Image (cartoon, rainbow, N blue to C red; front, side, top):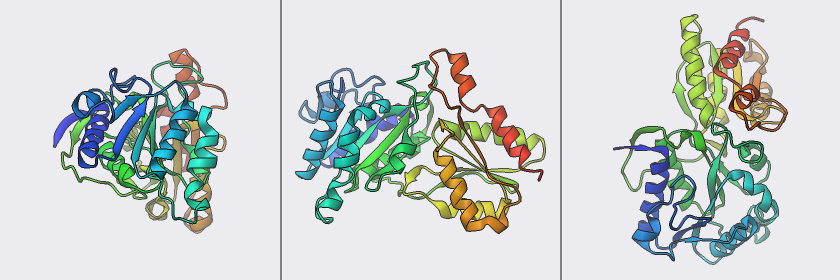
Length: 326
């Protein structure tokens, strides 16, 4: 184990996989010398050469298209986008090409492509650089979607993503890059997709959260404990495939469900989870599922206003508390 930041877990896992397999390479804006905006590729080119970690033109459509072509040709590209908000510039490439190529070729084409980068609030990056977009990519078959909330999950899930023969959308969070923990050094440490993590066990209410909101859900759970309410906190870790079974078993125990995410509440992934739980274990529910998410407006530049748009710990506490009463 080594104590490192979330950002360093990204960098070290990339380096480890690039050393293990010379077909793995990284490309993106300013990744070669600067190491990307948050330093996640710093030093890779120095250590392995500029043909393994190199800069691209400022065109997300070009990056994704080149990544798809390289994957089809037998390479294992990792495309870093400066902000995952910029996936919207390359939606045709991602949705109509990357997601569908394996299906169109009858399963014979392998697409070992990872599209990774950061998203989310916390730095006042305003409306076009602070969005949470993982829900969008859950909708389209052919894409796997990973959302690591810890450095350990970064290491395990990114390694799994790089070795997968299917395209993976890998969502990191800018506000988590500086967080630190002990991360396994094992070059073969992997976390399987589709396996949620129970971050805290409880018996009264189930709270499902991802990325930055895992820590906020744990804060809320600590506050609820003071009131005698035992909250179970579950981190899906991957949104596709999604581990419904772990959440279903938790709700069967607690009888209550709260979903909370940074993405907009309207049509957010929390709605899908609430719907699935209601359909599968309705008789076990003691209260209707409660969904928390960002208000239906663009993310403000001002930090105070940004915080007013997204759920806060107090709102999670209030939502969980409300489920205790019919």
